[in-house]
Amino acid sequence: MASESSIGGKATAAEVVTRFAPSPTGYLHIGGARTALFNWLYARHHGGRTLLRIEDTDRKRSTQDAIDAIIEGLGWLGLDYDAPPIFQSDQAERHAEIAWKLLEAGYAYKCFATPEELESMREEQRAQKKPLRYDGRWRDRDPAEAPEGAPFTIRIKAPVEGETTINDRVQGRVAVNNAEIDDYIILRADGTPTYMLAAPVDDHDMGVTHVIRGDDHFNNAFRQLPIIRAMNAIEGNWPDPVYAHIPLIHGSDGAKLSKRHGALGVEAYRDEFGILPEGLFNYLLRLGWGHGDREEITRDEAVALFDLDGVGKSPSRFDLKKLENLNGHYLREADDARLAALVAARIGENADEALLTRAMPVLKVRAKNLGELVEGAGFLFATRPLEITEKAAALAEEQELGLGKLAQPMRAALTGTTTSPGIFDVLVLLGRDEALARLDAQAA
Image 1: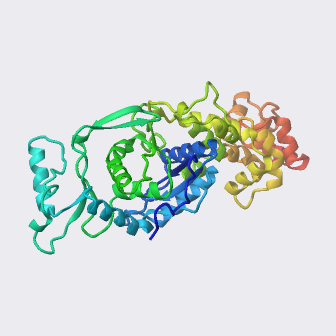
Image 2: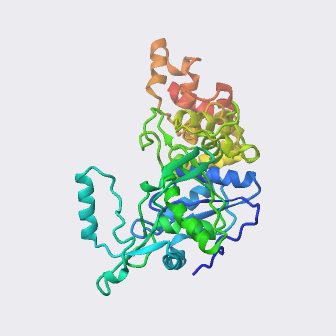
């Protein structure tokens, strides 16, 4: 069992500690990657620490493949952490300990309502068109009224009067009437903790000072604060974290982000779209955060500039074309040997890294992703006789001349396409013998 404030280290009085806490029920999607980035940048900007917590309490849906993909994706983006990953499932005993402390101190209570009773309650609420909330039927009852040995859950005794206010660093001041927060379960009948209990306990034990996450979690903050404040009353040293809830990412049409917009795992941008990590890093940084009109911001500059004041309140829009355009900038800035190795891995065993390295200065001029680099490099490894594209072949037919006698389509004869680096670059890269052999093959 993890003891209080032992996981991830103890924060000093003025130290900033952030955390990224993905659920491993899927891969690291684009929204999660941006949340991870903002947490990482905020901690690095303030000289603090950032931690990784895998929220794997949903054992049926959590998979090792997803855990591996999340960790690999974060590593590919260059997001490092200041302690080994913490697995929420390992802290279950600690979570239960807190639930019982809350119960003993009168901030929680045993609920003996059966599943059938709860479903009947919900049906009645639906019929009356009321919000589906637990009605507190065991809040003030004596547990002795329950049948001996009856199973029970433990529910938080949420405040019922007044309101709870959060001064969010992104959303500003937000207040919720306490009557809207029901007495939710913190410990199930089988003794396992719920997410609503586990998350704030882990945040406390990890020393987290700033909870930076998507605004789809905003309601969770109002539900978790009763636990934090009750434990502060019991033990002290359970301060409210600073909250910053980031607007979600929408598609380019303003609709909720879906796979058709690009809501894919980070590995898809690397493997399918051929995006460099620095390209995605920069694009995610600018997706909801800004510093004047600057678009191209390096990692070091991002650490120096990033703060929560620059995060907008409105949803940002994901645009694959803008990502590719920004990625094109980083392709042109990238080391030629590095790009050659990445392209060679995509081409396969026929690739010549040395030749690719020499060719890269002319190949990367207009490319926006690694796929375009592979396509542009294709002529280097083509075998004779070259298969001429329809567009290139048509050019010769329009001129009513044999391809080998026509100067203009020489590029087509040498590369098989009408798009390639400049003809002199092509000649140099192919070499005299190969260039002549290709021209002869087309003239035959």
